[in-house]
Image 1 (spheres, helix red, strand yellow):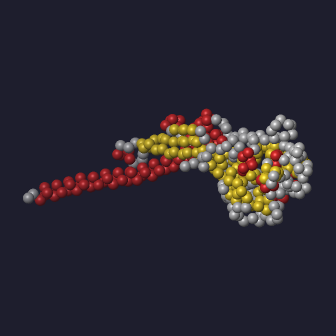
Image 2 (cartoon, helix red, strand yellow):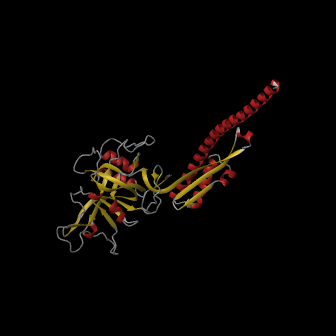
Length: 369
């Protein structure tokens, strides 16, 4: 055997094996580097897609139309570093109240070029919706009974009655059965055959004592909190709204009585549309530091919208003809508002599950699964 020739052959095989191993190692290193590069690129695309989808959903909530929402989606892709060519490769889909944005662009490779991979296609998808608010901030501290509110016609006046004014609540009972107040009292002042307003008695509304911390996140500030149910806190929130964010469902402490000291604050909001909690029941399980006969807890399940008319010092109800003599003219202080069904009622720091909103319902835009 030629030993030198054998050794040369062995050396040649080792070199071939080393070259193959080196190529494999370089391929793995390239894959690892490119995987990190693709991940970083995808994060940038995800941020762009999220911002784009959210901007479009907000436009839908503001009733600006699909064309404007589509333009906003493209604008936010551009603001997040995507070129016009990248945007043309991407996809924006608007269906009813939902938006889907898939951002795409090729990512240039770093080490994989030696293997012939010059670029890798990267994509990220985001979904958003403009729907019924599942959480909201900027709430007015007046809660209304959901069943009563739902029955109010769009644009119809809502009279929030104060039973403490003369000790008489606006209630109606016929043959021992509770009825709508307007079945006993004249609510059709112009005699056109339809009621001009709906009376919200004490059992159908409450003044909310929004708590600090329970629903509030650090990014929000509640300038009115005083950890109490006094007039000063409630009137502050009538003027400024609640600074925290509430997530549904929620059990809130509050009072059923109307605060007479709130007159100026209510009138200051006249003509404004405000967001109100809607409760399904009272006496839910929650701590309540409010005291007195009017203290209650309210189980809030939805959010609605009303436009404030103002404060009426002496709102009078006259019994309908034929009512028993026990029904006499009653007068009260009252807060007047109208049910807003414009579809323009939106919270800018809330979220939605994507469920479409009713015309009277508070809306929010957010990312959804």
